[in-house]
Each structure stands twice: as structure tokens, then as C-alpha cells.
Length: 493
Image (cartoon, rainbow, N blue to C red; front, side, top):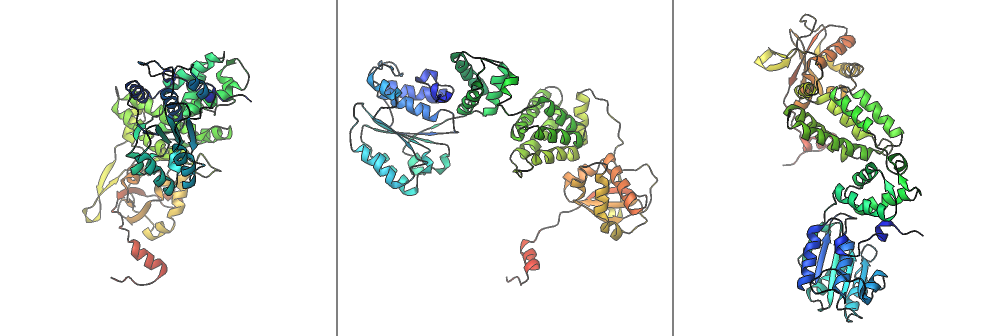
């Protein structure tokens, strides 16, 4: 059976560790100065080097051939050789995920500590996923950490530091590991393929580094799957057999649809991407990365364009953390595209389009009209003359859902906004539609959208009418009274 790359090329010296330089330097200084702590706590994401550095620390402090001014193991002494062969009796590795109980702590740690090291200076316990220990197990471990024998050293590793009792944390020297940068991962992968006698396109290594999200073990696993294809020259086309499908064309088409306020082509491209086997998670990440890059570039020359991409980032980031049904994995992204196309500020869009050299259609500025009770509302003149509605506001309310559906035939994104609208009243100029949230009010307070709604009402109500929008005060929720209305009963003060 072939050995996994992350095991085959696991660093045997500190100077071959990728990333975590701040931790490596501190530990090496302690080794040189002879100031080794009795307990360490390594926390951070999976696959970033916690166990690797723990094993190197254990190997180095028991090395017989280490030079006085060096913090690297010699690699030739009996201790180093037994360690490399996984037969070092003074180094005990425990997986807390499968040994959670207090009995395991007593048997594997407390009892083992009663006996001095077999041949080395220290007896080292490496406890992985330590957060999985039970409360009683932590209490038993705490007593040992408080008064360990001089030869006992503990190295605790966890991906969930918040689950570790503060009493344990306070008795350990804590190191926080971080995700590796793409440059660090690419450098490591380049070393591996050179050692394997393989060549690969730079784009392949870049794709692996991006997909691994800072986890070196994941990156090496992906590379191992590609090398298993048995080719000596790895092209992007060959790697695509293993790597999740990513498509720059899809990203560009989605962003173009958002820029044009036309959701349909973006949604169709998204569906095509999913049907071809593309990864929604990675597509969302690529969209976020592209929007961030566009935003940073625009900051130098056009703040309006930068604001637009900042808005895109907010929406795509929200989609990134929104759960979706397994049968419709693209749903959060579909909602994001529709939200952008239906609600982004026209001023920001116009600024962005001017920056990109597009020819813009001139749109009239909204006009404001006085209505009853001297309330100020936002409105826009339509092409037809001002005309009072020939129907009552009650009739419009009764058929409002049909009007919303009719508007959706022209712009599929508008119903998401109009469903929050409420017909308020008719005036001498036309009908007034109210919206509680400024988000929805601003979206409808655009000439194009008002025109679409006016046409929809005309087709449903069989009467030509101007449409105005107004922001109204949000209704205050009364949760307790709502429960009473729903289930009956009385509110007792």
C-alpha cells in the first residue's frame, strides 16, 4: 500500500516545517536554552502542523546526539531512529476522540507516569483532539498537570480551544496555529513533486492551494490523488479530473449579470454550472475572491465602483454561510444574484458602469409630490398623463398578488421586493404603495421599476394609473399578544 504524501514527507527537522514560523522559533529557543515547559497546548485548524511540531518537539528533547547550540535532532542516535520507526517507547500518542473516558486517562497517562522513561530523558504524552475528553477525564488530567514528575511532558492539541476548561489552559504554554498562505502551500507542493520526479503546471498547484483553504494536509491529499493518475506531467486539464470544477467564464457571466441588473443570464449560467458537476462552495469562494480583487483595484480610481463590489461581497458572503437543501445546493447563490439585481443602488451601478466605459441610458430624476396630511412621498412621473385610479384601494389590495406576479413576468426579481409592499391609498395623482424597509423603498423608487409596476397594475386592474412609493413606519411586533390571538387565553399582569 502506498504511503500518503503528508506522512511520506512529514518534516523530520524543524527547518523543513512549512509555516508556523512564530511557533517554531519560540520552541527552538526553549530547546536551546533548556527552558522546556512541562505542558503545551497547540490550538488551531486541522492539517496545519500541530501534530507535526508536537512530534518534532518530542523527538528533539530526547535526542542524544543533538549539538549544544542546536535545536534540531541529530537523526542518527538510537532515540531518533526509534522515533522515525514509530517504536519510541517514551513517546505516547493518544487520540482523545476515541479515548474520552476517565479510565483511559488513568490507564494511559497516570499509571504510565509512575514509571521513569525507558531510555530517554523525558516521557512525552501527545494528546490529540484533547477537547473530546469527558469532564471527569479533564479533572483527572488536571491533577496530573498540577504536579507532574520532572520527566513528564504533555503536549495537548485541539481544533476547538473553546471546549478546553480554563483550568487546563492556565497550566499550559499555549500556541495558536494559523492557516498556511497559498504561497507557503505552493512552495511545499513544489518540493513534493520535485522529490517525486513529477512536473506540474503552476496553475495546478495554485488551484490546489486555493481549494485547500490553508490546510496543508488537504493540499497534499489532493496532490496525492492527482499523482495517483500515474502521469509524470500534470496539466490543468488532467488535474481537472480530480479537482472540483472551477470556471472563470461562469464567474464573469454572473458578475456581468449583476452589473447589468439582469438576473436571468446569471441564474441560467449558475444552473448550467451545477449540472456540469461544479462545486457551489468553491464557486462562491471564487466569486468572493474576484469581487474583493475588483474592489481593491477600484479603490485607487473610483470609490463608487469600489462600493458596488463591497456590496457584492456582503451578499456573496451571506450566501456563503446560508444552508441550502441538498437538492438545490445553488439556492443561496441564486438568492444572492436576485438580491443584487433587485436592490443595489442605481447610483453605485451607474458609477461602476462609467468606470468600465459602458454607455449608460439617461434616466430622469425622481420627483417628489405632496399628498394628504402634507406627508412627503417619493414618486416618479410616468409617460401617461396624471390620472386618478378608476378602482378602489380595496380592489387593488384584493388583487395585489396578481399585480406582483404580473410584474414578475417583466423582471423576475421584482416580486421579492413587491411582496413587502402594501397598497395604501389612492390620490388625485394615482396609487400609493407603502414599504416599511428603506431597502425595498429604494429599490422601487427607480423609474424603471415604477414603470414595470404601473404596467402590471394596468393589466390586472384594467385602468391606467400613476404609481408612487412611500416609506411607512414599521409595525411594532407584540409577540405575547400574537400568541394569545393564536392560541386563546388572557394576559395576566
